[in-house]
Length: 544
Image (cartoon, rainbow, N blue to C red):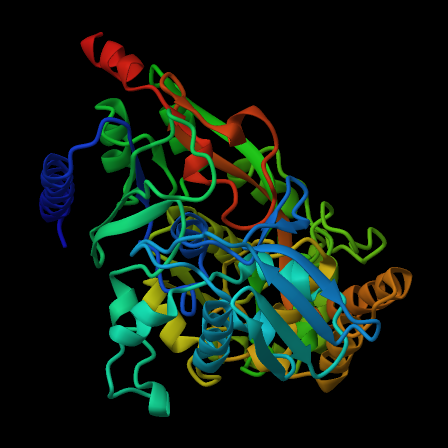
């Protein structure tokens, strides 16, 4: 494609998005909207989505069984209280009365059972949190439910900040008879692609795939909502810096949730009325390596890559303010071991390891394939940096841009998963196991979050052991062992922790995450009912 055609294509793309946004805004009037741009739209079925975008949607459209406090610890919510048996196998949960779904029906214990059964049966999204063992669910009465676990699990209730309750009757009414789930048909998946079945503070008004999601406030929400909270939350799919900058300048979006380069964020920060907020969500960047595919199936080849990466340089230019990470558990997370080995750039050691690998004499025949997701432009910069570093020791790198959908499809099979991929590690619940189980255990292979294909029974046994351990001191010992074990195998390149950097309209938006450190769990930095919008201040900006 020549230069003129590229410019024309970019112009048409930007024009399309602006026209779409104009029509989008004109069709849905709101006194206090909060409008966001995102690199990709959320999957809004809580049994199917697992991305940051999806979890942020769930937190607003649905109520979780328990809600995290500022440190991420589970607090009463739908569950007003709970008890656990002395053997750690039976959790009795008491449901709060009077919570209404968006259709006005009451949330009850039967909905809790249906939601967990559905999540586990579908086996997607965050179901991995609840699939390690059998769970039998007993509805005692309308407001009491018991979870009978196959094995003890001291952290079961903490995981339930990721367990969102769906309206059983509504989903059943909209379930297709034909589907992959036997007597459950499609289990309502078709309906929940574009609708919600929740009880959250916001409800879906319209969802158009790959375009936008429009939600409005639920007037009968059971918790107090600030009078200045957004009365509508709208998300459009857009990631191009020029598009987002235009929308920010025209005050047509209030924040951008898409990942942007440091250079672009600095430009956004210079716009009058715009600030880039920075906070830590116990997240980090890493580069998973396929341990069952040549040439990254060779541990010496993987270690050569680990020694070749210029961590300091990458952090300086791509992630200023970040710190190199030690293993897969973030330092903010309980159970992190600060003594875990950490690689640094040493080309001599990289070449030594490369010579030990079985591919040393045929490097030209084994290029390393790296995927980067096109909606997150910073990933391209990471991939280019890695290509440069590995080129210095004679390793050829093939960079391949890929949509999230395409990546998810390829990573579902061991044969088509790439050698390397960029992964943004976040925190689902506040303990080390949250960043150690699904990322490396065998049962989570063939999923978009575990592309190393480690398939290691020794590690799997450690996951089972720590999950069943009720004593906290003993869990700490096992966590330490797990972290050292994984780093010794070198299945992943751990780059750095990651500050969440989000441009937003600080002149007329009061966002709690910009005032103090928010809850570090995925999605809980964007609870719409806790954000305040002042439209009169927006009007003043527009006049100027």
